[in-house]
Image (cartoon, rainbow, N blue to C red; front, side, top):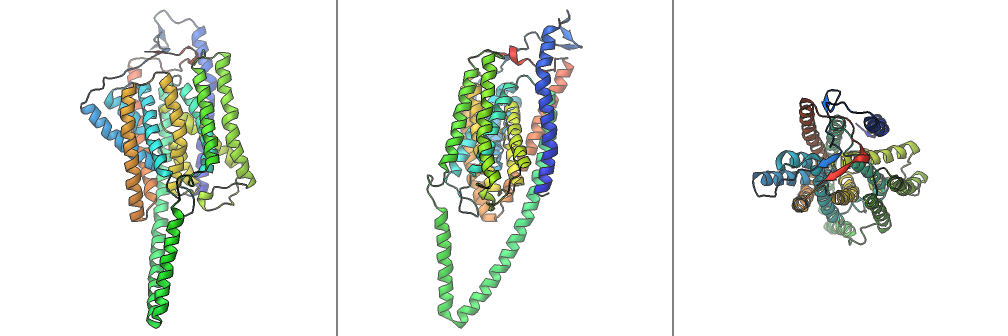
Length: 476
């Protein structure tokens, strides 16, 4: 499945998802207003389902932090999830949330918040590790800053939407959407990995044949003229030393400071707006004004990069093709995918990389660069969510710090071991297979938890409609 097939799949999936999301955003307030304007039955039931009059209050469930089998098992799963998730560039939130709910014992919303903390720790450690790394084949950083500048602002805009509606959307709808999208992404990534594996095998065979021919030629030259043979060997050694010296640059030279400055500026401005929202009344004029102000900031920065790509003044250099022509509909689709990735991340406590990683691979970005850039973009969005959740008092700080430490150590170890393995085997496709496996496991774990909760709610005849954002309060 090539780039054309991936874009066709994304056109279909993203169109359907965006239509559904738009319908939900439009119908949610109206559904809530109808519930408020209609007098409830005396039995406090709506269509046979119990509706708790205090359902607008969020009640957290925080277990005590005691050393036992739950902490041990949770730490192991969290370690593996962070190691695989950061290597694949998807964060690992799809593994963290079920672990925190089923094993540790947190409620779903607190688990989502702690999951964001773990994603931030793992992603931050990965970015720190990658700041010194270079592109596998080109004389460039392994992080594609131009690609990040196109997607990251839109990702943060989506995160803001996802966090705001995290407590209003019904779980059954999120579970259905998650299973469909994740299974599709996992399958597509696996097929991409198989295709990359075949290409690597073919390249290794061609390189082996060339090496054998070169060895034969050098042997003949050395036999006919020993001095010439020595000269060829010395020339090859000199070229190898020069290539290695080009790749060794300082961290300061390996960072594109202008692009990084723009990304940090967007992060600061969006975070300031989000903090300001916490001091306003939900659904007030000021509340919506602060929300709307995020649009020109994020869309403006991404559009700035998009215009440069469209005019050909910039290119995705990490592909090795600086003359790539970007069409308008492609740019709009990619920006929309950035928003969608953020919405899913905010709603489910995932890193957004579940969509960005496969999308970057579909663009033809090398796996190492796709993973590093996806994680780089995720760091900004996930850290913003952590600050928001902290202000909402959604997670216990000691638990969060502990699991952040686990995720950070796992990310560093995972990056080091996988890069060593790739260098030894010459198989960058391992990153794609890790991504596919992580997404698949996340689909099974999150989908299973969601279905189990759905069955429980049906048996208990609990209300499974939309919540009301305007009446939401957090009860400590």
